[in-house]
Length: 524
Ligand code: ACM
Ligand code: ZN
Image 1 (tube, helix red, strand yellow):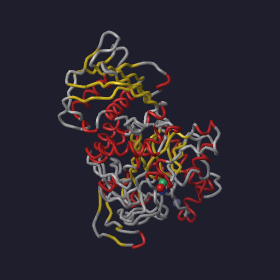
Image 2: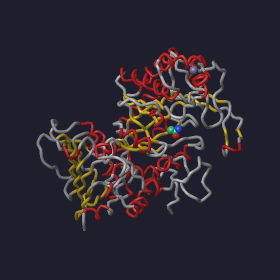
Image 3: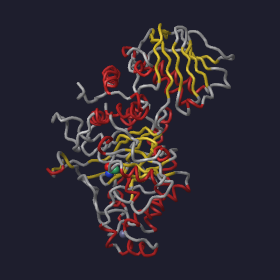
Image 4: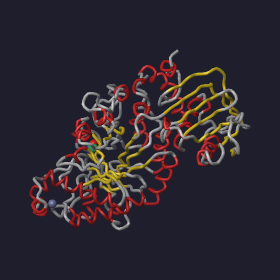
């Protein structure tokens, strides 16, 4: 059998680049050791993580040993740090033989992904079982590297708020599927959700709304129930550290200049009209946005100064989408700014706004990501563009040399329906089936030359929460579509195969059942 055909027998999702089944099995038991190679070859962080996993999640305490000579130790999970350019920053080579397991990687991240693979090579019955006595694994050899370096999942916590415990679950599910970036949509018209010490009203006032829209948008019905929620800075640090241990980078999104109504309720002096405002109770896009005065920039820079200390990510997402120019067109301060800066129109004013914020963030060592509207009036070369209104923004951005993350509504918006069953809880609309997500190709084949194609750094699944009021519903919308996207982003394009994926997925569902995940079952 060819390696390619064989790989469809591999029970792992996302599908590894190469999987060769071998005869025999290796049995992990209480006497199995986790063996670090000579200390100058292997860092011990990886070994500690393996030990924790086996102890906590597989119910099998294993001993960690540091080897002082090279070689393979029998009945050992041998971790060998190597210098192998082909494995890159995240790849690994995993060999399961009857006498030992040997894992090679350049980095702790590589060891970590090998561990995730190893767990999925185990029989599903042993997954998250509290008191395993031994676990048998089919012998094989796997070599694996990701196709894309940005493998993202987004979560909107403004429209509806989700507790820290759920955010952690969301991150654990990402790590299991080798996703590595979580975009945390922390601010929007319907609620500000991150504590900023210099501006306490952002959480005292802007995190609360008097009621929420319920049902379909056109019904225009409200629940009459106050709604609130925010994360303290301590909670944010806790989540970021939790994620980092699992190779997930958390990127905060602080929306500007639009989707800013909640902030303007507390600080109306940073709007065009001066207010007063109230935190939005319905969904949509609002005309009252930040007015680009020096005072507004000082406010936003103060906010971002606190944000950058909480998030070690290289990137900060500054939103930039859906900023109506209604107020700016008639605001004397905005018109004066346009004149003073020699700008052509309000679109160039938006570009001016984003570039000023970007310059500030660059001074703090951070680059920006923005939705594709930041191309309006021109984007700077250091900005990464998140293409959501289809692929065109991404194509345009790559042609101008910008890095691009693809997240088109057609394939990556997991707030859309996922069937035509008519029995899903109310959603945003659309119909983005699991098959459609699996068929997503982030690199538009005919529109970009090879150099430009390399600028597509990955893609992201977006979970907007207007119509997601509970954590179980968030799980239902995100899964299993996130699993399909994970495979699109990790696995080789030429090995993507819907039939193979669906059969591996049915097996994988047994793991998700053990996690008590409320995934959607439309595939059945
Ligand atoms: C967006 O969906 N407004 C980025
Ligand atoms: Zn203005």
